[in-house]
Length: 99
Image (cartoon, rainbow, N blue to C red; front, side):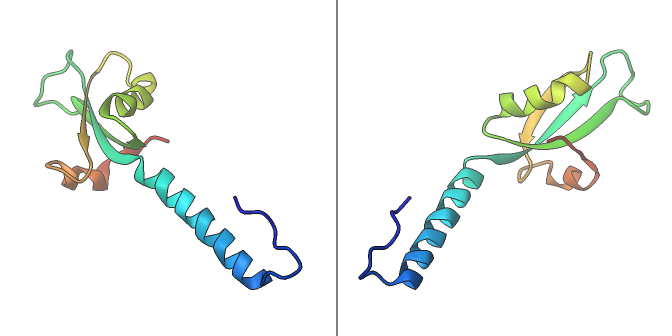
């Protein structure tokens, strides 16, 4: 973060620079995460039955982190994570969000 302006600096220029730094930091943090779809399947249920598959959406840095976020609410289910922008992107509409 930059230091406050001295007596000769332009206060408005300093405020613009500070805002640019804040936005750049926020964008860098956002860019480090990706959207994932996590599919949770129940091995005890037939694939043709309702409740066999649930879909969750979350943000994480890796697929493993995405599955770790979903795991506590999907006890006993098998988990697979895919990028939300990939092959299964149509599933995002009905996915349950996990923070």
